[in-house]
Image (cartoon, rainbow, N blue to C red; front, side, top):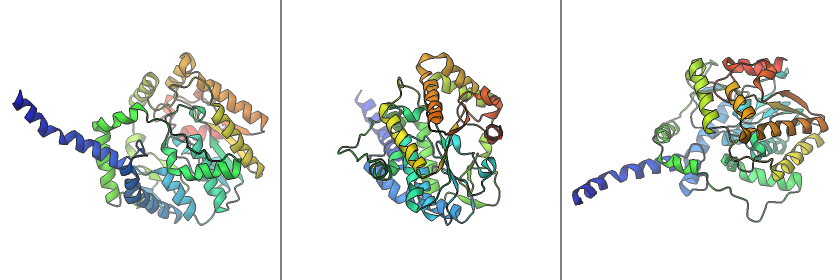
Length: 365
């Protein structure tokens, strides 16, 4: 028995090393309150995002982007841009294909970020206003989970100071004495023991220690590509996904709650609806046109939303946003229901993200 215990001791450093790498890299901001995460941001994330932002501000196409904190990127990019756009796009990764050709405005800048919460929308908009940009139109991707108190979205804390300062200055909502901190979701703790997340963390650190991105003249590349207007072009792997793989991803999302932030969502948050109202009314007070974009779900995921009671809050959120738009004279584009715009599974890259052809189809109607 003693020999077995001694042998086990040899393996203890391995999981500790894995946990350390995952926690230090923290590429998805799972552990944003950790000391090492803060150090990682200063040493790695900030410089990586700044380098990409500088290239985009010069009008260059950047590819092979991996693990970039897109909130840091937005802060740097908006700060460095030489000319303000007339139109900006706010929202999650589900808005990232919206470009100037779709709205007849070549100046459009897409400021979508992954897993966007309402805090992100407020903070990123404020960066443009603080810069002195005279925006003419704001297109906002209204995902159902931005009104969910339990959406488990904490990445916005990269822009925490911008968010609270905006609430105080623009909405007369002072920062609370003890800012609310959502408890770390169990799935975030599980990430410490995930081999898949460990291997991606190794790649993330490697890419950030090196330059980690490439300047190119091509829009379609092997890796993830960002255009100077902020829009994304999927990696070759995603562009070439088989329909079987795409549908499998959608089915998994529908069955496991993975990636949809609709679990533990029983009612629309009074706090978030109040902030949302103040946010939109503030924008409109500046004589800026507001447009709501409803990103659709893959048909398999939407069928689950329609048929499973625990997900039908998404339909209530859509109804809320559409009624809000009506009372505030806001134009709406799209629907959570893919059939509303004659979209099929062929237009989707996974359970919640469209290919560019799907977004074009919505904006052309």
